[in-house]
Length: 232
Image (cartoon, rainbow, N blue to C red; front, side, top):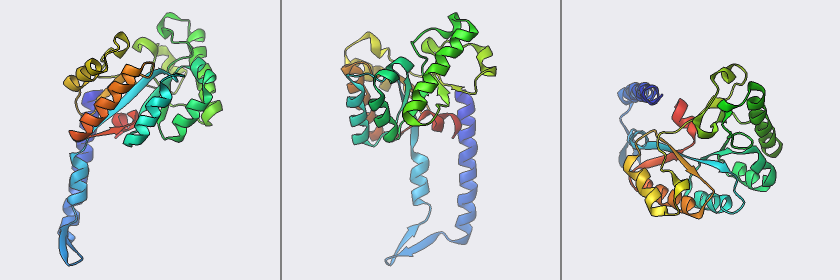
């Protein structure tokens, strides 16, 4: 999948370069307030941006998700949240805020169960109940699903149009309360176009996310939602 994303990204860059070349043939410079500015400066800066996606599983959490949302908004970052249906029903106002803030919302099953261990009917129920819970709050059905434990039933692809999303970097944040350790694990391994797995179920994970954002932004990374990684 990552090779495919890199190939598609390469094709996008080639297309941009071709357009930039054609544009340069017509006019390389524009005069603004008596000073010459190259028209390619802005697009060159855009091409320098490295994209990465932060994702959060198991929410919304009544204690920590709002703290996370406030920090993301302060930093101008959009993330992807894979929600549990039963938690959506408990905290619809948090989901409303999440949606209003422009984050991408996905499905993480209703009760955090291994879908591959269930019958087809039971697995579909886990997915459908969560989709309905999210729809009741946001007015939109989610398009993306992250199956708990990364265990999907391949035959369900024929019964749902949802897109499965896994991850490239997993710091196992749920195993520790040390935010610095979680952030360090990610920063040592993250690369362009990676999808980072975190959980919004502890203060340490939330603080680790803020550390990651602040550091990677300084390193030239742009934080996007998973659809921009998968399809751009």
